[in-house]
Length: 277
Image 1: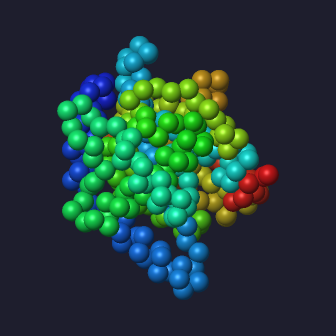
Image 2: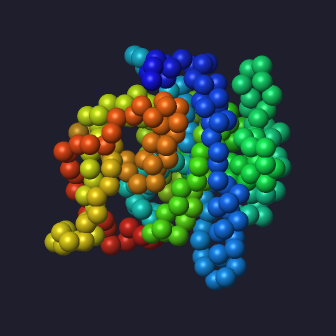
Image 3: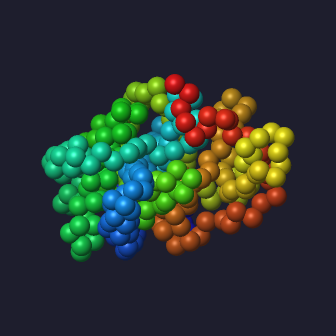
């Protein structure tokens, strides 16, 4: 892929939209299967998250970045990096979704577009989960829901450990905004898209549930991000999968492989699955 696209403010969003328009999303199938399972006594949750991009012009080499959050120790999965978003509230988000189209931005010269499918139900679910994601992003980082340009939906991603399915939506924030962090967020990370095309940033994350029990470890792909203070943040799990999926779609699968000899060990805290407060 020509990485210079990441530096072209006006061209890149149109490029992404063209790519995502060709992607088949599975929202109706997943939503229906979860609804049916929950009616038989299961408890699967559904989340909408927004994969936010912003054009950083105030740096040496202007480029699009991902705007991600690092979860605070007030919530479960503390220390993990994630996309802004959260759990679906069906009644509230259904009501709010009717107002979304009134304020959502469009690219210059184009009509407002919140559709990606010929299927009416799929398009409704795209709008519903975009509403969920933007409502939560407003609560978490102070994102004005009308300071977004919708680019397209990405296929869902299911987590078995948390009995949860994530519905990711890609958006651009045309104007930078001042972050207003909730207690659930430790900080916002702005990661250049080109960062993911440098294989030296890749590693294997060795997750352990106990510092003394090597048999209880699991290995995952990860990205290592310098925090600017001599430390590192680790991007892994569902968020990395969503970003990897997005970049493979827009780059025609030209990302580096995760073949690496670098291994980083992380021991999960005892309350990783639940908040401390």
